[in-house]
Amino acid sequence: MTHAVLELKNVNKSFGPIDVLHDINLKVNAGEVLCLLGDNGAGKSTLIKTLAGVHKPTTGEIFMDGEQVSFDKPKEAADRGIATVHQFGGTFPLMSIGRSFFVGCEPVKKFGPFKIFDRKTANEVAVKAVRDFGITRIDDGDRLIGGLSGGERQSLAIARAVHFGARVLILDEPTAALGVKQASHVLRIILEARKRGLAVIFITHQVTHAMAVGDHFAVLIRGAVAANFMRGEKSREEITDLMAGGEALADLDSAMEAQSEATGGEPAQSAARATVA
Ligand SMILES: Nc1ncnc2c1ncn2[C@@H]1O[C@H](COP(=O)(O)OP(=O)(O)OP(=O)(O)O)[C@@H](O)[C@H]1O
Image (cartoon, rainbow, N blue to C red; front, side):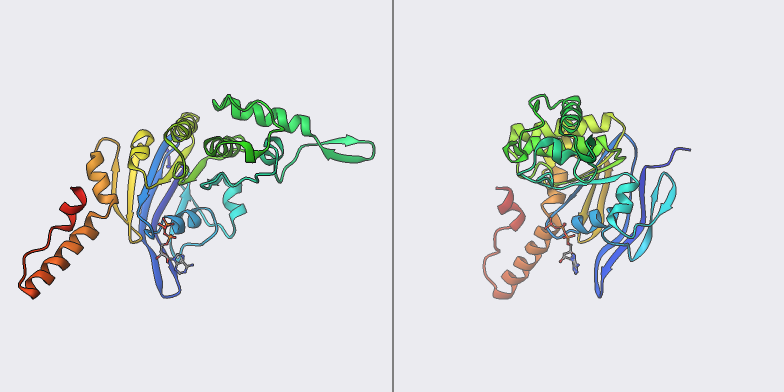
């Protein structure tokens, strides 16, 4: 029996008296993109941090390849192959591509009695890794990260994670700040990571981007998985409605109706209809 690369069973997370995640059950397989959708404050960051070893679940279990794991710090999650790429690629604008690719594990060469950073090797390996990922516009490892476009930075960070053996790639809103062309570039890189057999968790607000690459979708509302479905099981409109808080608009409608009844006035226009119009 093949196990999911990553599986969460009944994961709860509380901060003191504040319960943030409620009974999260999710799994992601090798070569699959799980899109995690949710409005602001839904608990996406807390979930990512719980997977990446920043937080420990209050209760519940996390499994990798069927084996229960527990991370005391982010390095332990990273050593198991869980890599998180944040919105701006998490790199330093004033570093070169070669330098930032190897930050923390720089290749060195001998220079007399000293060991110095092997810039040539770092640049060659970094440029090859990103070009293999289809980022053909990067051909000089000495270029500064600050001179790359947002999409190129994201793509570089993904290629780096894959190069260093990531098995689970957590992408935290990678397309949120990008224009259409740049976003489609990053989506192609996500598909390439999937093709290489990674388990990808793609956190996004953008339903169009999720639908372009997702195999499996989970919608978080107030820290719980409100919907969990596979590609083709829900329409764009249904997902958008869930995402836009159809529930919240329904609450608002009832509040407006109650107010209108209380004042005996004309019924106010439906919040949901007003939004759609
Ligand atoms: N350390 C903490 N202590 C107390 N409450 C917290 C803590 N971290 C998060 N929360 C609460 O948990 C809820 C979910 O927050 P989280 O940042 O995970 O949401 P999110 O979906 O990532 O939102 P956004 O898209 O705005 O980043 C929020 O109400 C937040 O205030």
